[in-house]
Length: 465
Image (cartoon, rainbow, N blue to C red):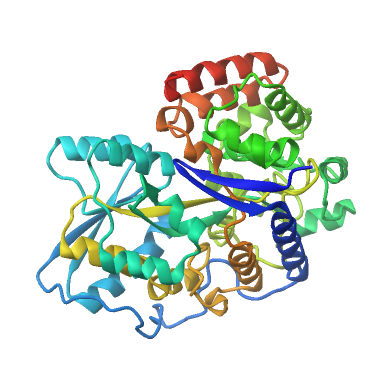
């Protein structure tokens, strides 16, 4: 029996009790179950039909920056980028600065390296991995947060979320956006037609999947063209099955990927990935399906969509909003089922990091650490903030409100996305490392030993061990 769990983020360690973890999972389960039948606004509906989002009352002090220009780089596209730009527009109104959004490519650390080499780094960049923050610090690219940003962060964030943005004891990142990556979304009509119920365990998930399959619909949609979705699948299975201590050890490469616990998790994943016709389009189809399409094809096509379920985080709501499905009625959600003793709680996020140590850049970091900024994007849907000062009432539907409440209630007791903690070369590069090996495993789920050997070889090279 484990008596404690550990949040490891680079060099930072935060200890909490296992009991708190169990309560956090229970709270999430109860919250989602309670809101499963809600039919409030869908994820992409801000509820404001006047063509804009009303800004919250000002609570953060920002300097006047008339005539200043800033660039903010992020990999966000589509609706996510559009919504974030509304947050930047409000910053412009309050300060007089001009902010330009710079679209970046994955891996963003490579994109930023080329910008720096060319003498034109952005003022601020949104980095999705603690490993990328550490890499940027080690290269001397970024600056610590100033006093005002650090103060705002301290007032609005739990210690765990602050610590994730630290390197060597110094605060570099503001985790503006969070993600609950332990959710499975399902087409309510498909489940009703199949007579399936929301599962709480892995075996119940397999049973529900078989019922959906027997009704004539592929159980799962998998966005295998994006390797990060596959790492998320693995992390949830591994955390629940192997436990938090092993999870932390593997995240830091303190145990090898050839460990029996990894074999067990991959073998478990193969129960879905390797089952004939359980994945829409088969392995070849899934490997050509990008994440957004994996969501939309689950909620289009009436009562005969391409799949009944899609695994991914709360941000799935943005893509559901591109269909006619309504979150809470047509599109419902349940927590990732328990594979082992407890259900997993895996989180991710994007942090604002300062690349140019100017008054304007520090002011933008301060703004992004405020509840004012987060509330603007929260109202637009498909967004989750770790900022505990954001009132959950601003979220556009009951599903999102409950997910947000559960994240804040969990406090520091969660596990950050494992691949995001890894060096970029292993955990965050398309066509390489963990992303590529899991894509190959999706194609051939029988080769567990081969996948382990390749994962270990790539991890050893990336970690330098």
